[in-house]
Length: 102
Figure 1 (cartoon, helix red, strand yellow):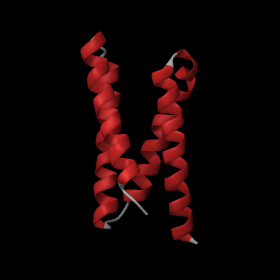
Figure 2 (cartoon, one colour):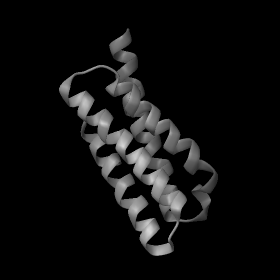
Figure 3 (cartoon, helix red, strand yellow):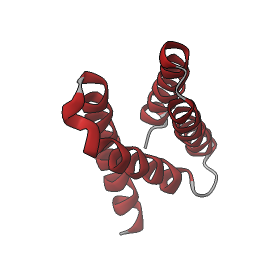
């Protein structure tokens, strides 16, 4: 199990939220990007340290990002990339969590 996907997704979400705010002054982009980014980074740190709920938080952050970006996936490359990367990350952490629980 690796924390790297959560570190990458957390960084991308933080940078994306800050960039969206800087370009368009979009408060929803800022709040969503920073919130999901911090959740991913917290989960990555928890996974790295081996503490409780890191995998669950990474899976939850992936589900949250996926569900919020699917309706906008056809509106441009950024929502499409968010949808794809959150799906891949969610699959990875879901598969990992399932394997550990068996």
